[in-house]
Image (cartoon, rainbow, N blue to C red; front, side, top):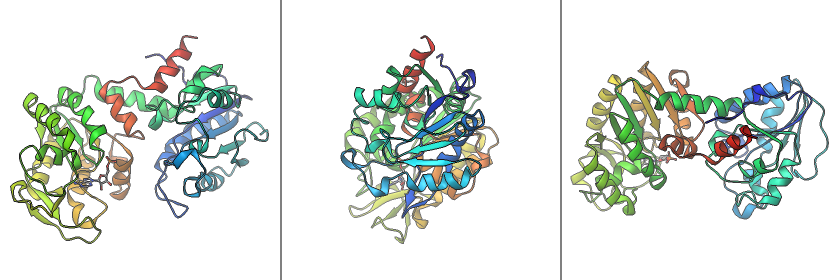
Length: 388
Ligand code: AMP
């Protein structure tokens, strides 16, 4: 894989358009975690230091029908940047097709790209319009690198120069490090609710890891092979795939006991049960104590750890123990650990273990697809520019 990075290109005085991933959780206009913004800052600040005219764009959430929706506006992010980058002028534009010129060393933030008609469909006209905004396109949104959209991929066809930003390069280098000749034993932990997207990666993880621990809806789908798991979140269409994996690999760890509740709600009490004892009106929302003990022992011995997704509904205090204990076990292991995925970042924030994970990827889907060995569209686009 050969791609140019921003350090190899003279950007001084140039108009640079940086595609960031500023898709942070926002509630009532307040940013809940700035992890993704902080990860994007090195490239933005490098471009400002080098006296480029810096424009940044990002998506936020999933607005319907590519139309403006206040809750998905990047305005709170603009306010954040105004405070953070207080040494230069920071502007905001809600219409990318009608922006005022900025001076070198200044920053302009564009409104959510997903308000632009054609963004999701990778529309050529829109891609071309984006390319007209800049001399150089810097792709730094690793979290969106698996999307073939106008701002992540289509623009590449029309800009003269496209390169990767610092975050993008660091994501790729760290993921490669985890995947190429990892120290053994290597343990992968996959939890969360997006069962269908994550199932595809299990094959690859079973191949490259010594042990694969499954949690959340993925574990439930495995449990559903042999048990009636009541209302538990799982994906019935993937049960046969789970069966195939279990028959093919003997390194998949499925919970032996679980924390159960009757209602999916904040103060729901939890009880621990064996999977065979779950009733129709109950649902699995976390690991039980025996499963936690077993997984912690595996993590303690690991020399490489890949982690994506909480093993339970960590947002509810009574169903947090599995995710918390496992997260802390990963943090306490001083070997190489890599974690990724939106909700994994929230877990890391919640338990303040950021400094104890070797590398935290900002990618969710992109992180998974890279591990799976798929060629990410944004990488493909940057490779084409390398050979120009
Ligand atoms: P993901 O984005 O796929 O990493 O999913 C994260 C979400 O999975 C979190 O909001 C968790 O609450 C949720 N989750 C984890 N385990 C379960 C479970 N057993 N049942 C329902 N939701 C779960």
